[in-house]
Image 1: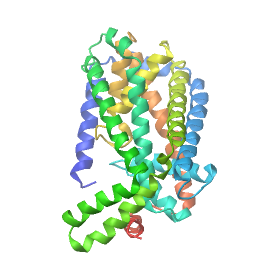
Image 2: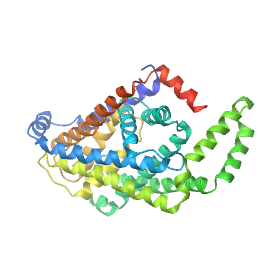
Image 3: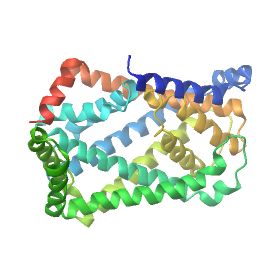
Length: 338
């Protein structure tokens, strides 16, 4: 709570919330929320948990070269990671799930983090793809969102950067010995002597975590799984939409999903507070949805995305008998150097 990064995130979230809600007619907003048919949220939650299961399967697939772990074992750990991202700052849930997996299955934290980073890059590629395939439609949209018109440039630049970074990971995975020698050259020249052995060990474990990317078939499988995951999540957007009095196409919701997750890169408060809401309302308003209805839908969707997985992750974490505390941080440091 005392770290400046946390308070910066809170300020960023507050600014986005003010931008999103400051000019709304609160009476119309409350009417949209009050008259919504919330039964549609239930199938949306079900579809979302199928997507989380698919994420657990993808993580199991990426970890196969290191250790084969059943998806039913990975699912609770994945939920714990979601809970951590939704509650703790700086997306600490990613480290948390790597630490929990180390406790349960003995997988090195560095190797787990490598697969998690790979996941994130594939997710980014799919999100950029959702925006990219809708660029012609995006060009027709008009709205007072402030950034809708610039999303095209962001999508093009972001797509290029994502593919460049992903290419670097693929080359590192396919040529681990060359990458290790290259990395060791930097370690020997830039790291103090007392840290070199530890850093070298972390580097090798990290490269082990990229082993699944050495096969083109594996790359294709991870990519296709990522597409399925995000289409399922867009399915939740579609179900929740039916709770409110508006209709847009599934492609519009794909575009919204892509934009809110890309904007979520901004270091706001945990759970994408503010960034998700402002960007979601802006996209729907650009499609001609009434701002009050767009705000009601986006905030209800945000809660429906945040609450169930956070509660389930908290349950699994309590069942593990662990807490995100100074003790867990010390354990993470010890296991990272193991």
